[in-house]
Image (cartoon, rainbow, N blue to C red; front, side, top):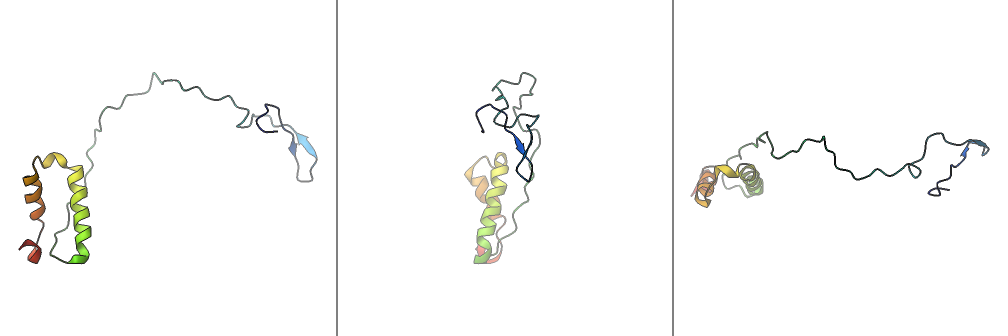
Length: 103
C-alpha cells in the first residue's frame, strides 16, 4: 500500500503478479533536504532593459481610449526613470493626443 514503505507488486493486465518495481515510487523516495545552494549565483539586478512599444496616438475615438491608456500605462511603468515629475509624464502623454483629444 502506498506510503507504508513496503514495495508493492506489479500486476499484469490479467491480474497476476509480475514482480516488484526496481525503482522506488515517489512515496518511497527520500524527501530532498532544503539546503542552500552554495554554488548558485546571486542575481542582484536585471541586466537587460525590457523594450516596450511607444503608445499609438489617440484622436478621441472612445473605442480606442482604453487601449491608448493601457499602452501609456505599460510604457511608463517600464520607463519610469524617464518621467521624474508628474508634469513630465503629463506633457509626454499629451504629445500623443491628436485632433479633438488635443483640444
